[in-house]
Image (tube, rainbow over the protein chains, first blue to last red):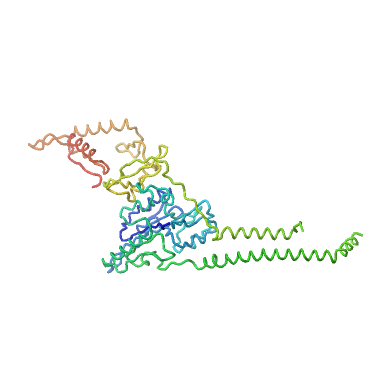
Length: 277
Length: 187
């Protein structure tokens, strides 16, 4: 099955917050009361009631070309998701179309996914809350009414979001990056084509990833590798060993006690009788 | 052999519990997340128009059991092709918001309180006041020129009025002698 993905083109985004509202509306999440914090970014961060936000990076310093860098932040649906690996209860999983899906009913709210995620995306309230690429829409939606695309992608009035087959989107994104370069944005790049097994949400950026608050080379956390790839199988091995040892001990002990019975049986009963007497 | 000693029994119990713990969190056991049920199943779809600005984006309104459950953009509408801005995306709130006005609110002159009124009171009252102001301020002539107008009234149009409504509203305003025709999008 071809992998589904969506592409965010920050050079087309106008920062209207349409995707945020559409996401809240579709996922029936309540609005949070916020205060003005000096930027258009609102709400300030992802939360148990917010799955996607526009992050605004403003740079209006003297004698520089003014920048207003906008990044859409949500779950990036990594090809090799650290959260799924870290999840101990099976609430997070990867579908055959490459969507990192959530089952809140299985979540135990331990927060391991939040710490493991290279972008610290999953938010923990009573259960984990993060983008599932509108799984119910992509599975059951109607193409004609465009209810088969995620709510944020459908609503984008600037055409900054596109949804579809990942390979086709990568090709499209490369063309866009070339076009941006030809227009003088020499740092234009596509973020997320290869990192972490290829992100399911890729971003076309006009400036280096750091200007958008993105880690240039996100990696799976080391402790997760140590925990899940070393300690877990080793623990399993040790358990098998322990069970084996216990069984071996049991058999040996049984043999021993039988032997004891043969050799010293008479003495023991004698002793007991003596005690009684 | 038949009997199991207390110690062996406890050992086996511990081993079983340990194995179950590791098994549950192990990668070898695939977790399958159940997708949330599709909200738009068995819904009635009706096209509508966004109530906010003058663009007039098309909406699709999804209703189930006589209640609106979702509103999103209409891909067939040439204005927005399925897209909606931040305000338009929240169009469902117009229906569902607890702060939605469902009755006429009236604040009398010099009063600091809003009172709830019925439509059957409000519409004749508006008509009465328009008539009164118009009659009091109507001018037949400006100097020697016949003007037949009132300068005490203006009319304010809304962005989501369509062509036919605008035609009728303008016609109505001209009939009263109103010369100030304004539009919500310009104020």
